[in-house]
Length: 114
Image 1: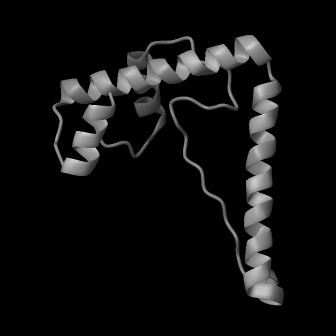
Image 2 (image 1 turned 90 degrees about the vertical axis):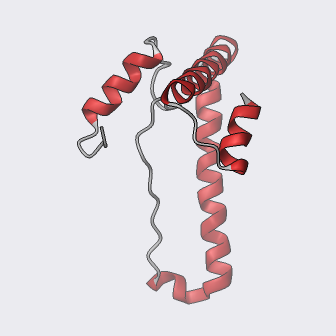
């Protein structure tokens, strides 16, 4: 998997649709495997820990901005953006196939280029 990724990212290779699907399925399966293992070993504690880490990071960013901008931070607009993804740590671990999750994502995303 690492060779495929590096060839695409660093060498500019354009993989076939089949290669892309295979890579995507492998990544998806690995993520589900890791999330399942975390859930089996730690229950919901890992999600709580991850949520705390995200909030700690956002607070750290705000502190650094405050240090750099001083009182001007009150005039600054700080935004956070997120996008829906196939797998989320804030939702239950998916129990559907990669094909099904892609189809659901495409049907739920109005601007998805088909």
